[in-house]
Image (tube, rainbow, N blue to C red; front, side, top):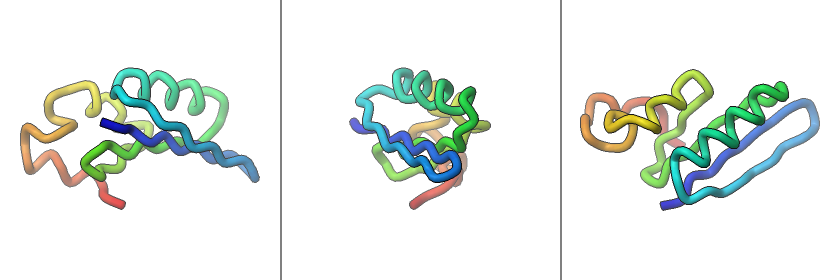
Length: 74
């Protein structure tokens, strides 16, 4: 499973890849603390923003409940 972390601030854009949700969330939160607008795209295509990162760490975030899947898609 690959999680894509995208962070944007002013003219700077970074894209990182991680293979676990917890590592992706840790990196994304570090970017957010530094003033970046951050999103994580999950392996199933769901797009999570900073206020939704906790969903990646719960069973509701990645597929257990279809009604919880409407977070966002690319």
